[in-house]
Amino acid sequence: MWKPPERIKFFPSHGLIPDRAQAQAARLFSPIQLGPLELRHRTWVPAMVPWRSNEDGEVTEEVIEWYARFAQGQPGAIVIEATGIRDVPSGPLLRIGDDRYIEGLRRLTRAVQQASGGHTRLLIQLIDFLRIRRRPEPEVFFQRHLHLTDALLERAGLTGRTPDEARQALLELGPKGWQTVLDPRDWQSLQYGAREHVNDVHLPHIAQLPQELPGLFAQAAQRAQAAGFDGVELHYAHAYTMASFLSATNQRADGYGGSREQRVRLPLEVYAAVRNAVGSGYAVGCRFLAEECIEGGSTLADSSWYGLQFARAGMDFLSTSRGGKFDDAKQPGIGQAAYPYTGRSGYECMPQYLSDAQGPFGRNRKATAAIRHAIGQAGLSTPVVGTGGVHNFEMAEAMLAAGECDVVGTARQSLADPDWALKTWLGRGQEVRLCEYTNYCEGLDQKHKQVTCQLWDREALDEPGVRMSHDGKRRLVAPLWQTAGAKSGAPSA
Image 1 (cartoon, rainbow, N blue to C red):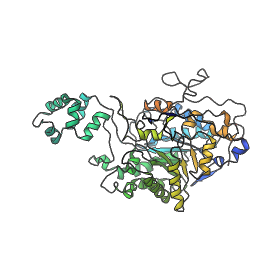
Image 2 (image 1 turned 90 degrees about the vertical axis):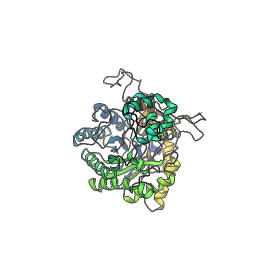
Image 3 (image 1 turned 45 degrees about the horizontal axis):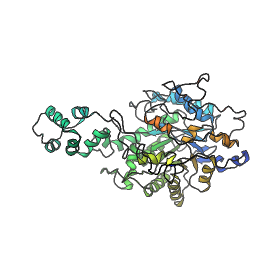
Image 4 (image 1 turned 180 degrees about the vertical axis):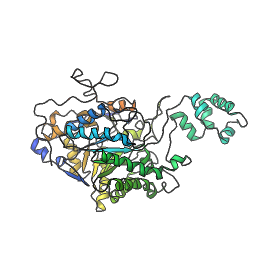
């Protein structure tokens, strides 16, 4: 991952630790309404991909144990990982592209409800993504993947050669020659792996995305509703299809790219289709980028305007993130796929303890506050979920008190200690295990390994019934909080 040149070390702190009375009187533990959905308090576990599914995208026992463990800490809400709306192979990632997935997802919602004692609301994040290939061996690229055009053959002086002769001659040119004769897109495919873009309207399935996606998202939302989820979060962030439509890099000329008004058109049409499918009594919101953090990408001015359009359309909540784009990702090794959290934009999404003067904590606060302010200035009150390096009560409470957001999301901190909210609510914040922001978890994710936390994945390995990682070295869920009376008195509205 890209790292700032300053390399300043930052360390998390417990901050102000409230006693039980202070915690239970705090904004963080007050209820809030997200449209038709009430949260008992304002702690939120954002979507994280743990690589617990199987090649068929099904809910496995490992998936259930993962989310049930978060639920035992009784956060206000948990958002299930990015779940594919198409019924296509996507590795061990959850899918919701067919009715056959409903029963497994229903088992998941029941498990979370039981584990949290009914205190935690459960949403699912719905995602679409375009195809990406692994970086190829040059021989494979030139022999199998490269499309021979007249312009390419002319640039290379190979006009009139047979295809086999031309491909062999191109391969023999070597890296300097390749950069000279290949067009920018082919050069990128050779160096990073081929990747589809929303601008590729010469491809029929890319041209048809605006006609296809509203229905796919709507059907997925109906399945989520049937499976017992309390709401859906539309994934409009990071490196994926819907975020790419919102990006300033989207220059489609079919009415769905170019200006802000055209770039937001499909996201609004997707939302309208979902709302029509699930009705007004079901929570629907989205996660989108406060800033893309790439050259030529969307800015805070864009996202503030987008947030206002989403609020006016009637979304029940907005959750912000930042960065995490393919555009500036590091070159992958041969045989590996590009990972959108390795460039500067990736660092902005998941900063670590070695940072610049701004530090890794709260890098998205100002941008989120600006989006919420724009919505409020228009007379609207759509709740905004703020995330990014939040790891203690004092920081979360300060964000709420300053009006920067209405709900506080904690991903890595919740992974480090699934019980952090419950411990704090009970006045036992000194027992919270703090995330150290080493990005150990991100390193596992990048390698598509089952995600764990180094603060607990080697503890109590001999615990009866503990489920281990595929390599047999790490436990897959955090140990239970064993302190006597840990579950006494749970947050309630």
